[in-house]
Image (cartoon, rainbow, N blue to C red; front, top):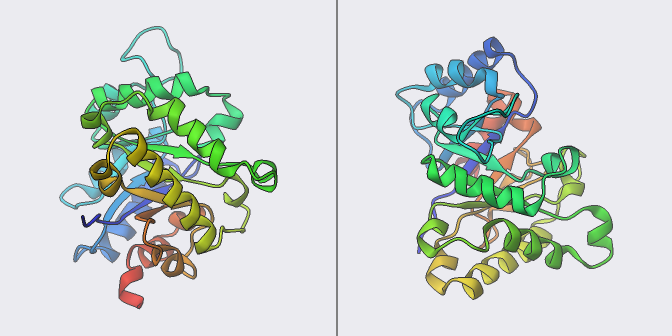
Length: 254
């Protein structure tokens, strides 16, 4: 089964609405002829409207960096799945390590957010990954499997078909360090095996699993050469149109 690569850019807490629109215009120009991969960008909430407007009539999907588990109500400062959908989003990040660490998001909360994204018609990108201490202790695979079990383990096979997984080793996010292609492949293969064990071989073959952690134009080809890596969740390098476009077009530099 052929899995079309997905290159996603997480802008984190960067760019004003005006700066986001400018960045989106740059991407639109550089990717005008349509790349051979799926592309998504995740601006801050305030920039979603301007980015959606700039990228209309393109194949670039806009997503939310988070969402609340409830559809509405007295949850000051939060954004719901239906709000994201109405704003033009097609995806939502769930469980990014920065939210796990800074916002203390639990596995139960993330499972509810995954279901909220699905209910709103959004594709959740469920993030998982270990800290440096956990890797050094030989716990990386166990940690990732536990995060997956808590966040998506209760989904039906039909629901799972609409989910993307992103493996992001915490020690390689924003540090300049990157897991070697072999290290990343080991975890991606374990994730795919976990999906096969908990659902079936078809679900495992179909699952898109992204790698995130200091992905740059200089290392993306090596990462993407591994058989179980189906794309990248890009942080800092997605904040400049030329560098992100170069990652998107990694196949053309072969």
